[in-house]
Every structure is written in structure tokens, then in C-alpha cells.
Image 1 (cartoon, rainbow, N blue to C red):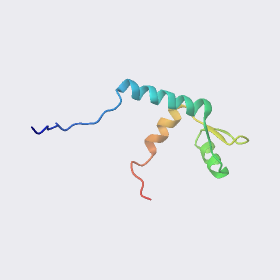
Image 2 (tube, one colour; image 1 turned 135 degrees about the vertical axis):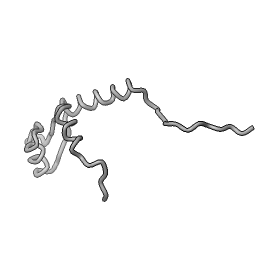
Image 3 (tube, rainbow, N blue to C red; image 1 turned 90 degrees about the vertical axis):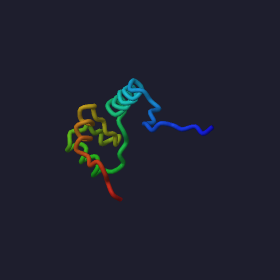
Image 4 (cartoon, rainbow, N blue to C red; image 1 turned 60 degrees about the horizontal axis):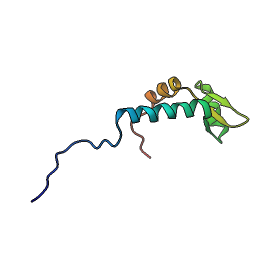
Length: 79
């Protein structure tokens, strides 16, 4: 007997899991930040309103900053 499967979407995570990952990610970006080793990039982040520690080369951004800038990003990039 042949088994058939109905089409659908693969959803390995429930919405609560997705929300938890998002929340944790936003906390990391705001509290720990991320290292940027390029002076010009640090200047650009600061010009756009992110918190920049030039001595440690760390950029921090709160959730509102991240989400607002994600809205401005293109949906596709061709390399």
C-alpha cells in the first residue's frame, strides 16, 4: 500500500517558541550588542541612531531600532 501525504507547511516551532527566540535575540542586541571591526561601519551605525562604543567596537540597538531598520531592508539582495 502506497502512503500519500497531504501538502502543507513544515512548522518545526510553535509561535511561542518563535516569540521566545525573537525576545532573546532582541535582548542580546540591546544588552550585549555585537562587535564591528570597521570604523566606517561603526560611524554609520551611530549616524543611524544605534548605541556605539567606539573603544570596544560594540554596537547595541534596542528592539524598536532593529525592527524599524528591518522594515527598510530590501526583501532580496543579489550578490
